[in-house]
Length: 285
Image (tube, rainbow, N blue to C red):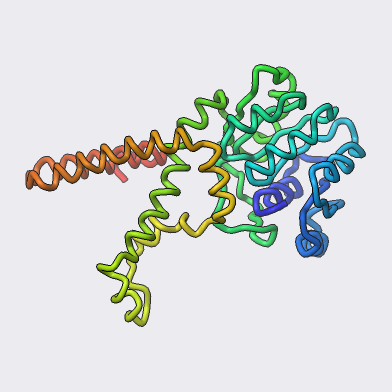
């Protein structure tokens, strides 16, 4: 129960649709103490391994839904320890192909609620994190239709919009809209502290950055270990999307060198329109 898992617990506590109990598993006593003190769960257990977590899961009622909320590599490892479990399992991982492969032998329907944050730990929980946001369901060929419906309804009852994709389709699209942008944000942070500006940054009594730059490097502040997992497990698609970005950047540099202000205005207007459509804003915003 990191930020996502604790937020899920808060959302379940708040939901009029949920009448069950919430059981949590964490890796540190500090997190367990915090969760108990804030009444996030009916029960919380400190577990040091997937096998130890499996022992707790086996004791849950058969109707329980297990939601995995750990980094991708840990989710892959945990799914290996859950083979043969009778409970329905879903997750909240940001990449799908390796998770789906690891889910063989598990009653599993993959989920990716797109609503994360650069903050970490249960202390960063947000009660409304899932409301009105999108959850992508990635059923495997082995997923049962009734289980797909249960998982879809679970997220819908928390106020989420739900759509379905295959795991490869998910990883290709999210490489463009989530994973590669994180790399680009990190690149901007490195670029912003290049020799051309680093000394001025050090001398300034307050940050030199404007709001636009802060917005663009915000996600570079996310958990590095979590993002290494995401990039590693979707490396091919991330590289492909960055190569496309490289081509767009080269074309844009060429446009600037051409010194055609009319074409540059058309480019800026088109960028604004595409931004609005990508983010769901009105075209005239």
